[in-house]
Length: 434
Length: 67
Image (tube, rainbow over all chains, first blue to last red; front, side, top):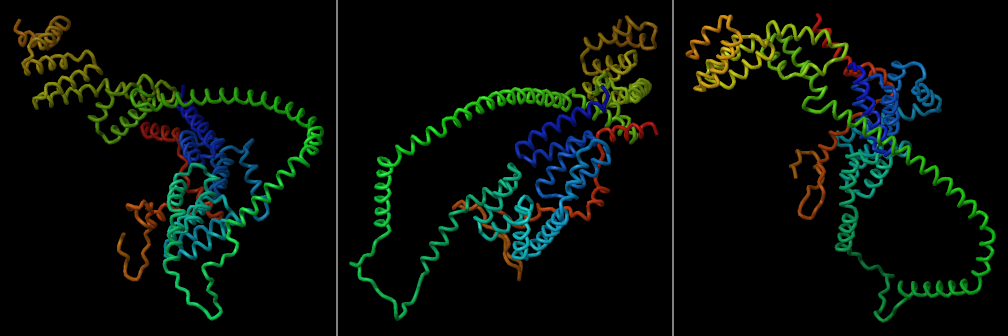
């Protein structure tokens, strides 16, 4: 499967995730997923169109236009973006209104940043009346209200924002602040007012003696309740039976029809549930496939990343880094058509030159006295060129130098038995002693 | 709370204290807000949009290698 097909698969998986989140009104999460989809495949028309719809929904009409125009450029025929753009152009005054909204928001932001918060609030209040779904504007207005400790108004703005983008983290955070402080601020204000209430008496003010009482609120309530109870009793015994009979006969037929409709709807719901289960299964498969692609160890994506790093090292003439990365890379998974020539070239170059670099690294490690590191480098050299007798001999020397004579003799024996004609055979015998 | 600069009104909201008032640093929160794209600037924005995807990156690397 080519890299291009894989990228398309991943893009489709992210698109499906974005679509599900958009259906749940998690527009922030949906936008993130759709942007990732476009990173893998910029021609994913559905993802780009949906991203435009999301931008439009949150009041960012300019950004929506940009996405749909790009979408149309990438796919000229059979593209819903054309209809979206046409719809915006056909709606009288809509684009002008959206442009004004963006301008007012930008102006309000400048006012807020330059200490003219009152102007900012006025401008935003005016703007969100026309475009209540402009989430950023509602958030900014809420922030300004929170700063002025007007938590109730802030809550109203944030409520509007949550209706559009249900799980927006910034909105939720501000809402938590507003909820925490709503009510408390009002109580504090009332306490303050009562503590400092000093009103001077005027000439026509009357002081009521303590014994005089007008109807208190409680008595009025009791009177009303008594009236209500009497009314209900009269209704129950005199009027209700007649009405009941009339209603029953009139609406029996409608109830029967309603039950039939409910039956039909139940069947439809069952079918939709079945389809939803299938869609969930497909989504799970796509997500599993995506997880496999991007997994850390041995995943295809990580091998591509290694290849990129190797090529970068070549470009920087850093053969040592290139070789070290090469021995950790599993090039067998990169079996697409596009990269075959690159992989073949790399393997050939490593076979010619790479093993010598590793052998050199091994020599340096042995000179430093790092036996384990030296052996590791020599072994990696053998991975690339298995018949490098010099590397085998040096492994033996390294073990002997470290005092592990038994292991050293195994390697010397390997040379003596299997490579008796090589230049290292005599030296190996000498080192082994027999 | 931070000290206000001379001649400038104090701009931070309350800090979370033992009574449980939630904290918002107004200046820090303002920085999160970015301007909105106006209709007249859409063309510029499209020109500046980064449309590179994974396939473009791989092709660029291969071309660099061949050269």
